[in-house]
Length: 185
Ligand SMILES: CC(C)(COP(=O)(O)OP(=O)(O)OC[C@H]1O[C@@H](n2cnc3c(N)ncnc32)[C@H](O)[C@@H]1OP(=O)(O)O)[C@@H](O)C(=O)NCCC(=O)NCCS
Image (cartoon, rainbow, N blue to C red; front, side):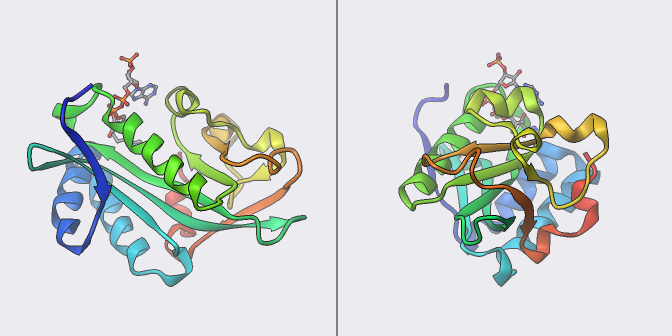
């Protein structure tokens, strides 16, 4: 764990550093798409409310996570829900708990705001460490039908009791995340 790691809400002045860190974290092909996604989400009213958190270490922005608003179209309209995307940590700082802290600080904040469910499409072995579990088995479908081998990557975390097992339906993200290119796993 890095000492003196600060997790704070990102502002407009952080955008350049956030874009560069995603380029490094994801590599220059996928990283360009991820950096563009961050801009698109921030400028997309249908993705708000948004929580955008930066990890700062000795003045350097070394990690970033974004949680944007989603709707569960199903039996309980109005369920407060978010999706975690993207998450990136600069390569030289990986494996030191930065990603985990960004996830946990974000989930704590959202829990306090009364959010019930948080979704993610990501590596199951990584996100299960933070309490995410396969969402499809719980009747919570991804915006697009995923190939069978990617279905375990669609996951959910309950933040406040009374949602899992009760809320069922298909998740619709804000417009910025609804493009099919974001759903290739
Ligand atoms: C995935 C990522 C955000 C993790 O951030 P991090 O700060 O390195 O993660 P943490 O330090 O909190 O956790 C590290 C642990 O997670 C494990 N881990 C990292 N990526 C993993 C993956 N894809 N699948 C399974 N485990 C993974 C590490 O092996 C390490 O395990 P250990 O604690 O037993 O040594 C970071 O590696 C990254 O930015 N990767 C490139 C972009 C990316 O893939 N983003 C996520 C998209 S879903």
